[in-house]
Length: 112
Length: 110
Image 1 (cartoon, rainbow over the protein chains, first blue to last red):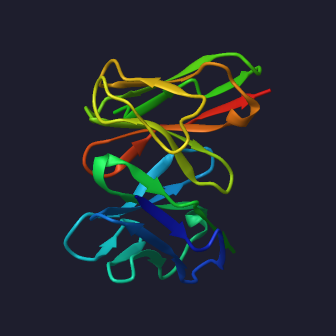
Image 2: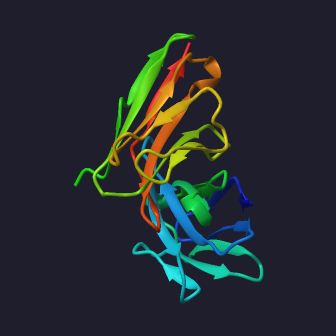
């Protein structure tokens, strides 16, 4: 069995401030880890993923996440957010049988 | 470059009516999934398929049925709709890595 806990349901932050969205997971097998972003009235889009190799992964728009196996975490960070980063963010874990389990989501609101 | 396409995008049903949601993918993915999204509850897996002709139950399968007769299509059926099935439904497909999502179907059962 696998599960994902996103520790913050809402994160308000001012523009150009740093942000961290926290994600912890549990699984009895090796997993792949993902962050997805959902803009209003749209489907989910992949933001970044950890499959293997370097534990620090980056997205094209400045987000990064670090896989920490000992703490079973995959926190998402950005050093300086923009208004356009306002969205809902989902952490997900994929284990055996191809099933992905999603967290409940974190709503990031960037204020001017 | 369609990716994952869901039809319809919106639907209103009366309690007890039936309907089928269609999901089509053009990426030759083996895995396909149906999720429902409700406020504050993230995405919950309804049913999934690991290949043509296979289906399996997810986290919240009751009241839904699925079929995967062709690799590119995954159908979600509601035989007798209930107000508790009011939700946004997302289809997704994947190979061995990330999932690709459709734009969603907003279903209201009155």
